[in-house]
Image (tube, rainbow, N blue to C red):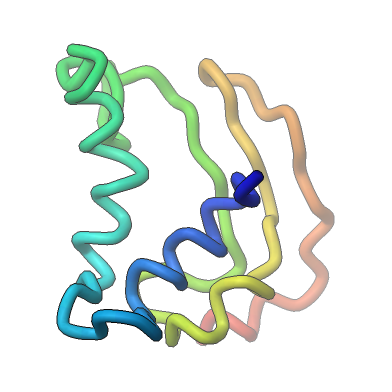
Length: 100
């Protein structure tokens, strides 16, 4: 069974060992975890984006998954998780200078 951790999936989509010409850009990989699933179930009007009025299901990572190197994604710390607009996980962030 494949690991469902999206950080691993994002990294694998961007760094292809087999058929590297099929590797996705960072934006394409992220859309595969956000916009595409919402569209697949007909919910692109309420999910798949972070916008006012959209259902808030999201994961806050320490580093931007688009800007971070693909090789860093599997170890990118999860700072928060929001499901249906409710914070269900929140790490205490002591040093935010890692974002600079």
